Length: 248
Length: 223
Image 1 (tube, chains in turn orange, green):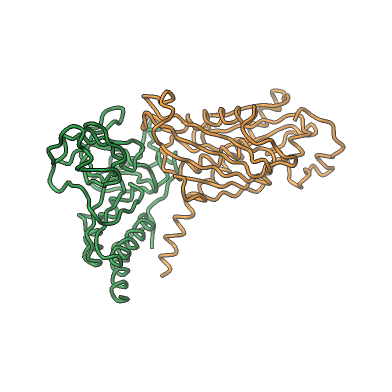
Image 2 (tube, helix red, strand yellow):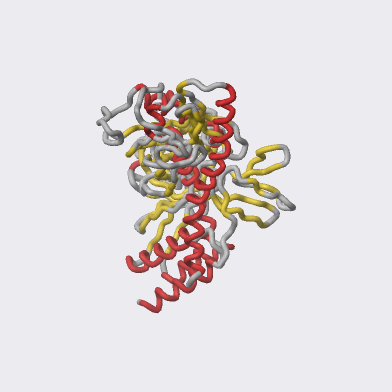
């Protein structure tokens, strides 16, 4: 980010990126649900080099009591990076960045959840980043949506997101770590999958209007692919139980 | 064996003749969407989405099992495995309770089988023990299942739970909130629990009653 100088050639002569991806290609994504027994719902996402566990607890009565909302549930997401998640040890605990991410993720999820059904409660979402490799807020949010669905929390729609950015003068999808560090711009967007409404958008660096439009177009298309992965992660398990029994 | 249709939140549910009911909301001019990750079920003129998992929310008239977690001067606070705690007032108990002597009748950790009497718009609820069959649960063993699976464990007209009761010779009380009280000999309780876990795991599949019947027959043959 911020376009730090580097000798790295982020895009080669064939138009391929450092990890050999084409500009419109996502990193491999794998989502697994119900990884934690004590949570009401949980999901682990592996997105490129990112490894993140999202867990959902609740709805349960909100404490401290002054945080209760008499009309709806409050969503309290906490984004946390493990000390060992990055190359150089990160000082543990909340910092400016993780507080900000917790806030934007909470707000993104609050719009998706049918919170009016649970007045006075809170829904806790814990996003633990075990290994970071660029795009953790979006990966964490994507996993949280799966964990919420697995916890049986009523939602208007699923939430999924993706990033795009400008690297070596080109618009590319789903930035990797080097591209994020040495690229010119980074644009994470999350949407409600069916309606396409945007629930999270941040931008670091500069994009022209044309570049921005191109980036959002790429993200729109990528979110459709990601939502299919989410669906498969959720439904696959239950379908397998049915098939297993059918084989008897 | 076929499964019921699995949907995730936001999936469009086609509504033909049956009317939408639980777990379905109007998401645009003429479309209805699922609000849960679960299976679509239709019958009796209604379409529902039954979630795979979910916290119980108290509803008036439900019979629930709860655990006493706090005792006040005139009320017991009961944990009903829900997002909300509930209250049992001493006047709604079958005993003549003097103020301040509540723990003579129900102490911390006791379980009761009670009925939800009232629920207000803030989801504050009060339960009562004054009805037929409601009581303090003594002895036995408590297990918990997700509340959306309770109807499946009861089965059509109670046939699933009756089958398990008969085959394992246990006494079973089911709470709408997903807590289940089982009494019997330890082996029989274990058998009943494994049958209930089987229903819980395969609740979304068809032809479950027959498979549970076979499973219970297998248990009998084995012992």
